[in-house]
Image 1 (cartoon, rainbow, N blue to C red):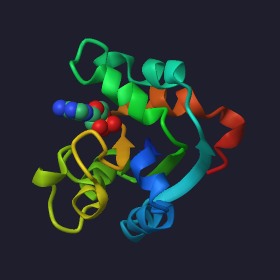
Image 2: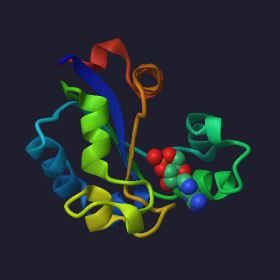
Image 3: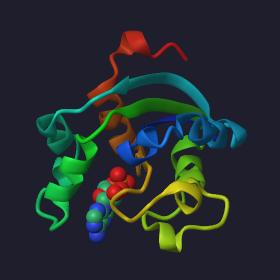
Length: 140
Ligand code: CMP
């Protein structure tokens, strides 16, 4: 199986509730390595650019406002099959549909305030990692 990297974001609802360590433990327990990580406060313009693919969705404005409301922790997770594994650990987008033991089942408040984001495919992972991190910050 290939070693992959994926972009993860611990969202404002989780940083606000001091859940960064508990969420990171879920990633590490699943065998994902946090190879880069920083806490930043996105501007609305930056949040809007990151989620531009959703710009025509009815929830876009709410999503952008939420992502810029408090600091987030952006991180690169590495491991075998990291993109799919991270999505398993996160659980379904809507916490009401997430499996037991997943981050969203345990911590998410709603479909909007769902604690974490993870890339959905190799091409988006590459783009999303480059959005937040320079090559110099990826030490492996
Ligand atoms: P994420 O994986 O970060 O990708 C896009 C985000 O949009 C998603 O998680 C949710 O937080 C948010 N989202 C998706 N559907 C809805 C919705 N119906 N209402 C509000 N936010 C949503």
